[in-house]
Image (cartoon, rainbow, N blue to C red; front, side):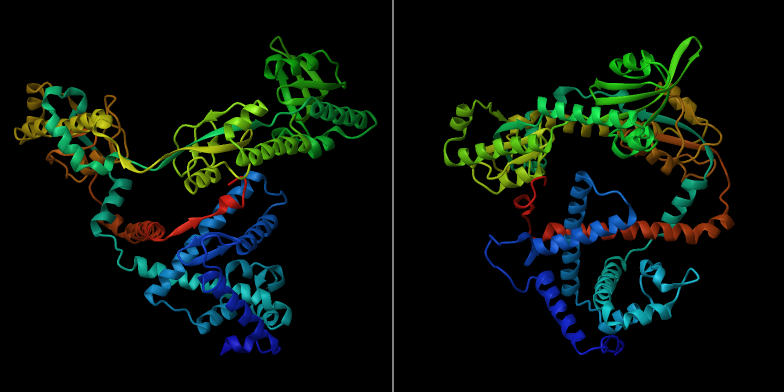
Length: 604
């Protein structure tokens, strides 16, 4: 086979690939490893597959290297956190897809992979300069490289990616093969883009109706509660008591930054270029790319301390350090002018923010860590009182980890949902302003909310149902009396409704007249009418309508047929994408996924 030919340069090639392949089986399919719940080095379980920290780090390193090739800037903490999140989700989906492929009996052969690797490599490989001649991909250069022993790992990586791609392709075909788009769907989409008409209509909306509270009795409400009890489910929640360790700059931190500012000013006064320094060290991201250039501004255009210092200086002067709530500034006055009686300045600045130093952050963390260790050995409240720390308590939160007053803390939420009440956090948890140590204080199990607690919402729900029926009954009463276009005005006057008239060039995506709220569902149905046709009752979430299509641009059959294929393909593509998303969602729901990232990442 072609794959064998590619590997016969040296005898040890196949052995290496065999080891790599076996490693893939072990790591990707969970055929080996620990069987206990506490698995060293495992950051997650996806059914019987163990997602190891080693594999996770490999993925992260690969993504970081790819990011570095695309941009000279290093990833910040927020971007790195998102990269880890994406890596986790991608691996979960990959494993679930491969397991489903196995269940469905989908196979990808080495011969298929070899053919694609050899003759149809991915686009990003075609763009590698060393595989190009005169700016075009040269298949022979690429094939020559694959036969070099140094290309073994490269070849293996390509094989793995092609294998994943082929499985994905086969699975997507399996999921979407029954999807189709009807002629009606294509026509509706065409009309939504091209139809133009003029409508006259009566709108029977919610505003004109009320529900008498006596229409809703206790028996009705209790029956609704029993029938729709799942709507009143109270999902598991937790609460914890916590001590915050806020990170704030110390006096020493301020002095150190001030010393840096003074040193920068000395460099500038000794001849260093202000703009070059600003590009390198200023922490004002908006201006550093332009060498700290602030352009022209008046006194009110900047914070008061900044403006006071700048407007008191002469052209060419170096001013600073000036302290504002942003930090310390060095200002270079470049020019002055008066425009319309208002004095303006053109200046550059360098900003160093006043922030906690690494030593300060480490000290705050150390204080939190020492408290956590002490509180685990003794009583949480007792240790807090001994250290003179105040204890706060969270509102109830779900496993998603949105904790009021502390932002999102999934790592802390995972800990709370995996440990009993009274447990003290065994690590220090970060939040935007510092660190938190906590004790699980309350466990709220899944339940159905008591009837008395949800009576109000039940009453509202039944009111909406009754209101909808009242509107429909009234609309049906009017509709029964409208047979001809001229009946529209007569019946509207009889029942004291307005006949609304749209513009001549109304489109299905257009606005309704007389301040009525946009209702795309009404317009979609109304544009199904032919010119001169009166509708039945059109019901939407906003109310009911009776419409008359006074005029309508004739349907252009030839134009419709010319766009049919394009519209069809677009709708099919959307349906395919949605079907794949729904399939992945179902795989996730059905899978047993245990996420242990909270044990490894403080900022999870």
